[in-house]
Length: 113
Length: 111
Image (tube, rainbow over all chains, first blue to last red; front, side, top):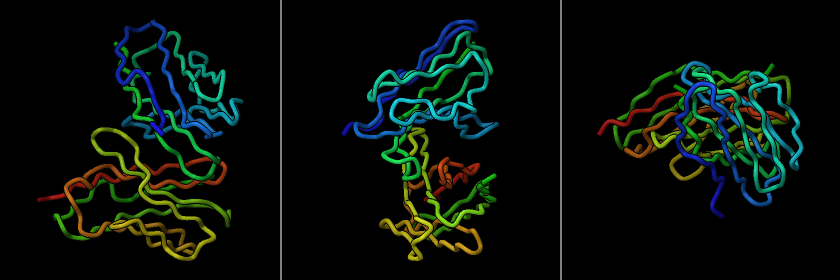
């Protein structure tokens, strides 16, 4: 298995632009998680899905952030409009069970200028 | 709320020596999972070792082992025969319906 695949690996965008991050989980993993990592706040859970259904989005910072999982093999995290404070590394992770342990993607480093 | 504490922001170890990274957590649950993840400069998060709380036996993975003290809510990671490739940020994590990560310990391996 190729693991969790995220794209793009790096994204630089201007403030106010829309940004879409993509994730392909490991086949057969029923749980998908989106995390944000910054030096100041560490790893923050943004949202997670179980069987394509969003279960907990309480970590989504504000309405500018949205996430979808249209099928078992694809998820997106969208920021519209983007702001400089959104600059971070965004990780997607998947798991066969909620507690069992994640497999992380390689992350997307987002820079908003 | 569950919290995970890593009290050592930075640690260093001589190559081939042994180092122990500390982690404590707070929970009222009896059944949960604990993990150590490694994040090298490549930023990939890599699962190092997993411990199930109902198992008394400490988990081991090659040169990596844990000292799980359930009553003390302590979960330390021991790295034996340290190698240059072990240099990374190490995160302790607790899971019971949701993951909680510690703030990380940056490990430097000195040649």
